[in-house]
Length: 235
Image 1 (cartoon, rainbow, N blue to C red):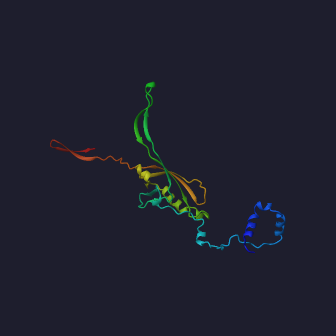
Image 2 (tube, one colour):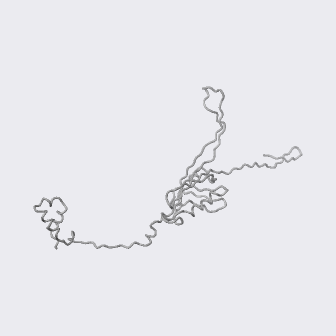
Image 3 (spheres, rainbow, N blue to C red):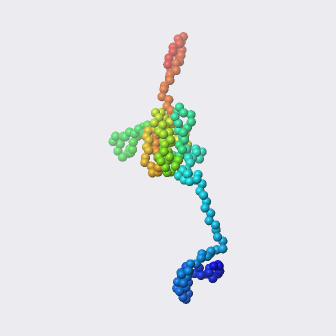
């Protein structure tokens, strides 16, 4: 069967309501149903079907997680180390850092001050420790699979070693350095339930630690009184 203008017109009208208005349409439709019509190409160009074979490497990495961001691509990377170590350990996924500070103020109230003296007398000011909250998460290499394949065990074990160390940690973080904080002490840690086979969230609560020089040194001096030289202790 050739593709002519009349055949194209009939094929386009079969699916519309306009062809039903033609006389004896039902009789023509019943007669055509008795015969098997060969397929008519609507366009003269036929596309050849091509089956593309998937790369086996892409199929194996279908559940692979996104790679970790290096330190130079993080906005505020957070690094810390023990004082005995030389290299800083940078958290592979940039955490959220919250800092809270307050002043300690000694207050005194005036007895029977009346309405003329309102409030308290502030006698002494001191700055309390900075309270630091570090919130983040670790992500495994794969989204689906066994616990050995998905759970970020190595990252958790390395973080555990730092959190349980009985000494202060030296930190390297832009927000903390802005406030003059170079050392922190871990007070509390929390690992909440996290949705996802390859995700483990953590929350670290720490306080700042500054160097204090509390030793009072005395120097030995010589006091000359007339012809005598007497050794004394001078502050």
